[in-house]
Image 1 (spheres, rainbow, N blue to C red):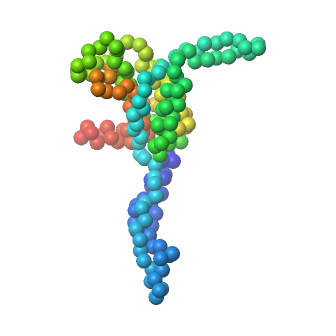
Image 2: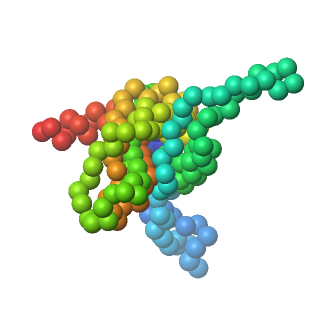
Image 3: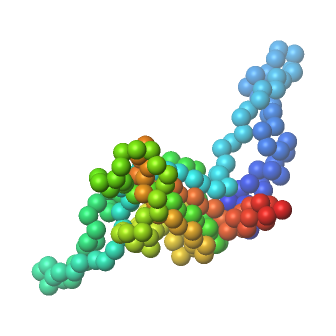
Length: 193
């Protein structure tokens, strides 16, 4: 049983269950009686996480190497990659979600900026079949989520990624969904019935 499952199960097994009113000893009445005030349930981790991170998706590609004072130094060759990963980390850290161990399912929907030559009319979506490569876009997101939503991106055993061009009124960015694989399989089984 994973940490996330353990937290949910332990809360459900607690006396009174989820969100049950608890006695408030500080509010004792003069005659020895106590008042019962409802206490909101303690925040618990989400079973899955979904966010949209606005901005131009950046690919994590090759590194450039050079020598400084006799030491090899590797630098990301993609411009704007550092701020893009920082935006993803910041948005992800605002969601109470973490999978410490076990398999993870990830879904990524990249929305790339419209080319300046594209029509300004409202049109349907178009798949982006040009650069940047979807695997390099994915690598940047998974590296940004490591240590925030999952211990390591090697936990990802199921991955779905799409890449499309933004419609005229749509903002570029990425939609990120992450869940434990056991929950992913359960939702697939329920939707096929």
